[in-house]
Structure formats: C-alpha cells, structure tokens
Image 1 (cartoon, rainbow, N blue to C red):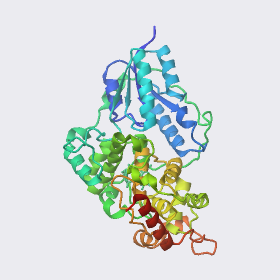
Image 2 (image 1 turned 30 degrees about the vertical axis):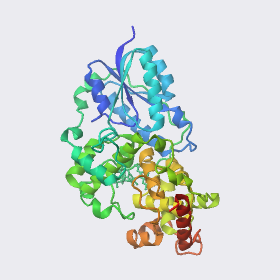
Image 3 (image 1 turned 180 degrees about the horizontal axis):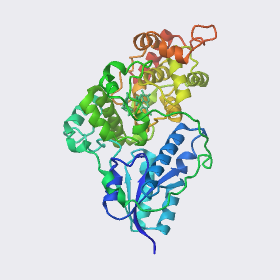
Amino acid sequence: MKPRINIMWFRRDLRLVDNAALYYALRQGIPVIPIFVFDRNILDTLGERTDRRVEFIYKTIESLQTQLAGMGSSLRVFYDKPLIIFEKLVTEYGIEKVFTNADYEQYALDRDKSIREFLRQQGIAMHIYKDQVIFDGREVLKDDNTPYTIFTPYSKKWKATLAPFFLKPYPTTQYFHNFFKQQAQSLPSLEQMGFKATGDAFPSSVVPEQLIKHYAQTRDYPAIKGTSRLSVHLRFGTVSIRQWAAKAKELNDTFLNELIWRDFYHSILWHFPHVRRGEAFKKEYDAIRWRNNEEEFKNWCKGQTGYPIVDAGMRELNATGYMHNRVRMITASFLTKHLLVDWRWGEAYFAQKLLDYDFAANNGGWQWSAGCGCDAAPYFRIFSPAAQTKKFDPELKYIRKWVPELDTPGYSQPVVNHEVARQRVLQVYKQALKQ
Ligand code: FAD
C-alpha cells in the first residue's frame, strides 16, 4: 500500500523555521515529505552555466538536507519540470494534501494553476499560504478598496494595518517530529544539472544590530558596509520577513520603510497584470522613442562608459552579482536617460546578473528610474553622475575600488556628454508624453 503522507513543496521559502506552509503541513499530524524541484522550465532558460543563484539555492538545499537528516528525515530533490514530478509522486505516495507558500510572479502563478488543477483531478487539495511578504496585494488597500500606487500613503496604511499578529513567527519546530522518516536521499549534482560552481562567498544572513540602528546615516554610501545585504536571503526565504520586519520596527524606521517598498512592489504586481507582462506602469511611456544603440549598451554592461560611478557599479555587478542601491539608481538612470536605452534592456541585464534578482523589486526599480513607474520621480529629474559622486562617494573610494585605472590615459572617454544627453532626453520624453 502507498504510504499516506502530505507534501511540503519548498520554492522561495528555503528554511525550516518560521515558515507558514511548513507549519500548516506539519500540524496536520500525518507524515510530511518535504520536496524541492530544480525547475527545468526556469533553469533551461539561463544562458550562463555559472549562475550564482543556482549555486546559492544549491548550498541552501544541501544545508536543509543536513538539518532534515539530523531528524531522521530527508528532502526529496528533483531536477525536472514540476508537473512531471507531481505525476510521479502521485504514483509513489498516497498524497492527501500539498502545502506551499505563494509566489506572485507570472510564471509561478501559471505553474501553480496547472499543478493545482492536476492535483484536483487526483482528489488532492493544494494549500497555498502567504509567507514571502507581510501583506499581500489584498491586504493594504485604500478605504475605497482600490490599490495604492504611491508609496507614502501605502506605507502609512501598511503601518496602521500592522497588528502584532502579522509578525508572529510560525512555531514549526514543535512539530518537526511529523517529518516523514526516511534515509537521507542524494541530491543531483550541480554538474548533472549542467552548472558549474563559481566558488563565490555569499552574504551572511547575520546582520549586526548596530548596522540597522545606524542604517539611515549609512545606507547611501556604497564605499561602506552600511546596508544589510539581506536581499538574497529575503529573495529565497533563507530568512523570515516577519522576523526582520519585527526587528526593523524595533530598531529603525528607515530600514522598515525599505522592507515596505518590497511589499509595495509586490502589491503593484498583484493589481496590475500589464506590469507582470513587462509593460510600462504608465502606458503613455511606451511611446518613448528609445535610441537603443547596441554599442553603447554593451559599454554600459561592461562598465566602460567613461562615467566612473556608472562603471564602478556595473563592474561590481559583473564581478559579484551585487550592486549598492544608490548605484543601481545611478546606473539605471544613466542607461535610460543619458543613453536613451529602453529600460527593459537594463532590467533584463540586471535579471541575468543579480544574485538577489526579484521581478517585483527589479521591475519597480527600473520603472522608477526610467520615470514610467508608479510613484516615479518626474522624468525631467535627471541624475547627474558627477553630483551623485560628490554626494555619495566624495573620496572616490568606491570608484577607485572598481575602476583602478581611473586616473590613467587607459580609462574610457565619456560615451556621451552629460549636458547634451540631458537636453536630448528632455526633448524625447517631452515629445512622447506630449507635455
Ligand atoms: P537594504 O538597504 O539593507 O534593504 C533591506 C531590504 O529591503 C533589502 O534586502 C530588500 O529586500 C528591501 N529593499 C530595499 N530597497 C528596496 C527597493 N527599492 N525595492 C524593493 N525592496 C527593497 N532589490 C531586490 O531585492 N531585487 C532586485 O532585483 C532589485 N533590483 C533593483 C533594480 C533597480 C534598478 C533598483 C534601483 C533597485 C533594485 N532593488 C532590488 C532594490 C535595492 O537596490 C536592493 O534591495 C538593495 O540594494 C539590496 O541590498 P541590501 O539587502 O543591503 O538592502
């Protein structure tokens, strides 16, 4: 007879502690088999075979496996398309229910719809929980039940809605005895999945309290370690957003606001499917006549624009998979405004390179920079790389780290003159927006 079990399907919630779906799965009282799928629908589209994200997930999965083996259980890890895996699992086990946490990106929504339908045909219920955000798109709305599109009023309502209940951790540990007992199973290797390790070290998920306390004073300076570096952990759920929002609430309101931006952009995706499909939030901006010069785009990607702060940022991204937020704004503004390259090109490049790549935050950041996003600065506000450098990297420490040839004749000439670019973008935007 097939063993009667429930399934916990991990996706971007890769932890055993304070995990909503895992808590509800374990509490049912019948054995829970945890699974993870290296999804070929996603992996097969990745051009680069040394992908830091895949490596980060892999290391995390190894660690989960060790923790579960310590309890006499095992994670079942697959490398295939999720539907194929579920077709297999129903033949092996008497599955009662499948538990998982919500993922709000378009691919994930489509995937979950098809898996839910397949399971329904087998008489198996799929339960999906909120875990990735504090509030999903339905929970913070204007009084007339329409979505916010401006951050400040959204954040006020977010804070007003935040009862202690929303930050309460899910006490999974007390139900760990309900994991299905089985021998630890082996994982497919990175190489079997066609990837190579980079050997990179990943940011720690332990952040000193002092850093959070001083966050408002330090967060804008890329030369110092003044931000949390939690983005990859929040992206893959190796830390709990509830735990960090609680800490932020206690220690620093500016830091809490950054976490609220994260919910805000998720809420935008939830309510505006055209954004999920890659269109400008403000549709009239799709009339902009981008120059899309491929040579200039390549120089931007490589960090060879002749604008030191832009080049430093792009080189940091290429070398580490990370870029400081201030510099993300400067490089994104430069690409869209100075070079008049469609923001989607930059969005796609960041998506390929960022370790913390998240559709909602990345799309939100790019649309904000290009001026077409919800709550974006007016288009005629154009970042001056020189002024930004003076303010945020006055001793050129960050720049010199990534552009060591700065003062030598070997450094690139500016790809465009700042004032010429400023006039050009004003004209092009004005024409498109008929203002
Ligand atoms: P901290 O400053 O310590 O902030 C704490 C956390 O708050 C971050 O880890 C992140 O989860 C959240 N956060 C901070 N700022 C934002 C923001 N503006 N929007 C949404 N969440 C925020 N962030 C991503 O997580 N993934 C992306 O793909 C991404 N792409 C971006 C692209 C552009 C063009 C821009 C301008 C910003 C982008 N951001 C993205 C937001 C931000 O730059 C990063 O979250 C931040 O730099 C990560 O470093 P940190 O963890 O030290 O952040």
